[in-house]
Image 1 (tube, rainbow, N blue to C red):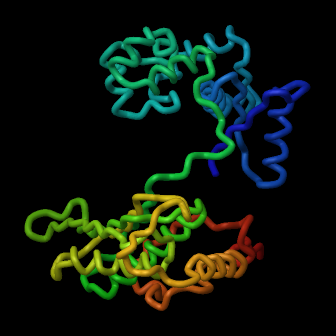
Image 2: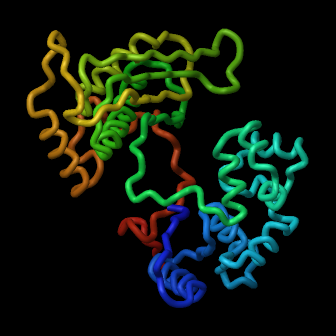
Length: 321
């Protein structure tokens, strides 16, 4: 987690002092320095958080509930439009071409023009910079309409068995995410490709979409479909650098009409998957897994430079000699 929005409506007392208490507790219990931004909108809160980290004199807390403070912060030279939440590099470049280089200019720009030239979200961002709340906090986020699990290999892969192992592992991970949001998928896509800088005849990239006979979240069914898709797009020779699995076409469990002529789903599929997920959650990932998802055989991404998990793993606690 790198950030979190908190709704402070109805919280009594000094909110700036509350922000300092949040910083103190996080530092004490997690060991991380954080910045706290307080504002009437999510977009302003993001900028306030940015300012709290950039200027140590703020003490790590910036309160932008006052409109005079809002205007003063948005007018600072460092508050460029590319620092605004939701304004990416391409959109920032287009805004710069229109003379909108800083947050204050976006906040003051004509709303109808922004909607006509860009989208309603850009217009809402401008309104949020002016203190008008447009993006609400959602206690129940909308379920994802697509789940992807893609990875670059630690070393190039040329053989189908190693690719099959990787695709099975990625499909297993995607299926776990799908079950967490309590949905089934109807379509699966598999892709494999060589390195980005591979040129000439050695360059290869292909994807295959596999429709499923019935909606499912069963890892066994999804892995089987993914393997069929992999066999369809694999060709011997190229040195593959990346593979991935994408799940699409989601429906809620029990919210679809079964095809009278489709194959019958596996019996007790949901119960089997629920038991497997419960054991893996309690005992650790891959405690129970499909036989095809074997341990790393060289294709897994390299992790030599991954940060140690000092606060969550006993085996990675630092040793003092």
